[in-house]
Length: 394
Picture 1 (spheres, rainbow, N blue to C red):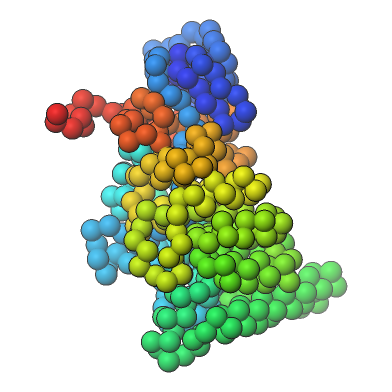
Picture 2: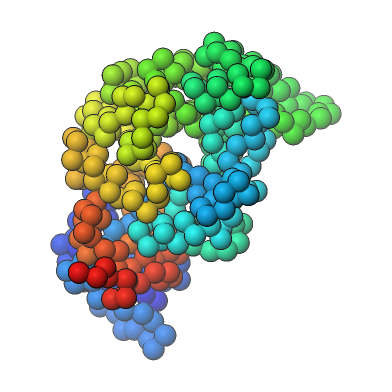
């Protein structure tokens, strides 16, 4: 057992315990109370969190950790298969290197789980993986895979394939090729469903089979969109095919906040601290998350690591809070909201009985730059503990 006592517990489930206890048995949260009276055995662990903030582990809803590795250059870059515009059958879990040092940086920041997947070079890039940040064997770290299929609009697929003198070279072609792929996948699913009903022989297609959970609404499209026109095109296509979708980046979302709200889709904001080096990112601003939230859109904050460094995710949420999102919603945007958006809120995102014991303990509000992570706990195991050796010389 692991018992955390006397901390300020922000459950992110509608309750704050100004001084509360959390009991962890094996890898799960067993109790969350103002006071837990239980006898500990010699092998059990006790953390006195008096004066500390105790929160669910932080979640990055969109990044490329382990697939765009730090310190490895070209050899560690496996984020995009820039040879074909449509590749739904690619699986990010086959390219995530758990030895990427960025995983340790994430853990030091209290980040316990991440949504990792392909980049935005292709119209359809492949499958995302939702995983824990601690471990060496990727198969043991997975929470949900596949967790989404990446689709991209705008400059990235357009410019990549223009240079190769092959389609797409325009936004019209991006939309048309995606519609064609979805139409073929829909027809494929109809034939497969019919064969299952009738018992007729059916030959599975490896390249179309990944679309089945998307059409069954088990996983969403994960749409790379910046500009207003790309956001609206993504919404239009998802509605045409009756699919779920998240709007990732959503840079100009504040301009059409009501339309996004009416679509019913969630928004994953960022990376707003990055350089505006692309035309479609000229209106990037931390205010967008607050504008969308006030209109009723559920939002999460992302790093897009390594575009911006993953360990500073809480600070990015703080900047969004400063620009109108607010402290409470800022904390939600890196805990319970990404858990809901990524379809894993049954396991992570809040401190509730029965959920995975992924917990981060801080000296104060993690969205403030002078706050330290004191403990990071993943699956009930203390995987990081702050030491005096890590203090910066005054």
